[in-house]
Each structure stands twice: as C-alpha cells, then as structure tokens.
Image (tube, rainbow, N blue to C red; front, top):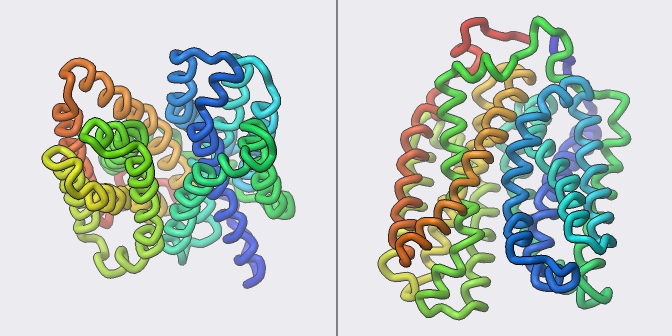
Length: 404
C-alpha cells in the first residue's frame, strides 16, 4: 500500500504548504539567473556561440531526461527525501558553477542544478496529492505561481546582485542562499516521509500508464504548451525587434508576458470550481494564445503589450495541466507516475518548439511560418485538453486499476 501521508496539525499543514511553495520558487532559479548575464559568462569563460546554445538548451533536455528517470529514485527515497535531494543538488550546482573557470565544468555544474530542478518538477503534484488531497487546485495554483515568481525573481534580481557584489559569479551563486533556506523545512520532515508505491505489486509502471488515452492527452497538452512557452522565451523579443520594437521594450514585454500569468494562476482554483469538468478552460487558453500569436503575425509593433498579455494569459494551460495531474488520479502512486510521464516526455517534445521556430525562420527568412506553426499548437491544447477535462480517473483507464 502507498505510504499514507501523516495527518498533520494545522501548524504542520502550514509547514508542509510553505515547504512546497519554497521548493517551487527554487526550481527555475538555475534557468532564470544565467540568461541575463550570459554575455558576461561567455566573455569570462571564453564560451563559443555553439556552447552558449547548448547552455540555453540544457534546461529542456535535463527536464526531460532526469524527469523520466526519476520515478524509481522517488519511490525508493520517498517524496520528502527526494525534495531535500532536489534542493541539495540545486545548492551544489549553483555554488560550483559560480566559481569554476572552465566552460565544460560550468556546463556540468549546470546539469547538476537542472537535474535537481527536473526531479522537483515531477514531485510537486504527488506532494500536493499526498498532503493536500482536499486542496489540490489551491496548492497547485500556489506552486504554479511560485514557479513563475522564482523565474521572474532570478531574471530581475541577478544583474543587481552582480552589480552589488562584483560580477556575474556572485550574481548567480548567491541564489544558493535561497535554496539553502528552502531545504530547512524538508530536513525537519525527513522522519515522516511519504512513499509513492513501496510494495512492488501496487506500483504503477510507466508502461502501464502509456496505454492510457488520458495519459497521452495530458502529455500532448503539456508538450504543446511548453513548446510554445520556450519558443516565447527564446524568440518573442526577437520577433518584436525585427518589427521595429526596441530591444529594451521587447525585453520588458517578455517580463509582462510572464507576470500576467501569476494572478491567473492564483485565480485558477476559483475558475476550476466554476467551470467544473467542462473543457472551457483549455479552449479558453488555446483561444487566448492563438489570438496573441495572430496579433504578433499581423501587427507586431502596433499593440505589442496586448499580444504579450494574451500570450501570458494563454500560458495558464501550464498550471491547469499540472493541477489536472493530481485531479485525474486516485492514488499518490498514480499521480507520481503520471507526473513523470507527462513532464518527462512532455519536456522532451517541448524542445522541438524553440528549435523548430529557429529552423523555420532560417529556412523561410520570415517569422510568418514559425508563428503559424505556434498557432497550430493551440489546436492540440484545445483537442487534447477536452479529453483531460473529462471526469475520468487514470486508474480507471488502465487494464488493472491501482488502489491505495
């Protein structure tokens, strides 16, 4: 039987909830802190453009590879120990890459930090399922907002830290202080861990989940949304820049795109409660995203702030999908395996997004084809999201249902 989560006191629930949110805040720090000082990093380490391209692609590669490979480790360690390990890896990776002087070692240290973040991605839904089965939408929205907030904080705060403490090294390394703080509550909870499936016959292997139509629909929604999101982060400013928008304004609009998703994510529990099991939310996210890209296609420099807002609101599909991972499973084991399947394989497919946009632009010499392709991804979100929205549990779609 899946190890039941301890029944905590009110204070204990606050501690667990705060620990989950702090964990989420740290999962994008390793990504957001490097991009804004990449030029300084390249100059100092003698990094070529090719190596810099590898560095910017590492997050999605690591999220896929380590996300898929984490299921067995999480089962053996337990969710609390896994969360602690995530933060230890992040701390080690962030500190070491701030002191090394070789580009290869810098990449390896980045992999350490991103491996931790990848495992953190996939344990968030089962942590919520185990500790807050009655508050899944609320806790999912809180950690979704924390993910966005951590990425934004790292992007905004790294340059001031670098200026204040003498360079890019302390600018990216001091974020390890935040990961160290987030580690403390998990250390306090190690003795009361939660395991997703310690009994062999009750484990839910990925090969069983792979036969579920619900799992495939969840994977497609996540992959399509993530592909579009990474394309936005990588190419949105350049699309606007080629249309005559200044680089400073384009960068600010990318920040706006990220920021508008935070209040939407916090309001997601209310929206889910109002909509219920109808597919209106994935349809809405798809329509908003399509409208944003249509604006970038037809009038990129006319109302770019509006296109940024529409794309940011459409990005609510990300947190909605994470919420549905827990809502569409009966057991913590099912949540953990579906999370690994959805995020691990989803991030692997998502890597096609930024790469494909760049390739199409190079082939056609225009942003029209890439933007149309991104608009077509919204059809995947709408169609697959319709399947996810149905009140069907993962375990009920399998040949042998799994129960706690």
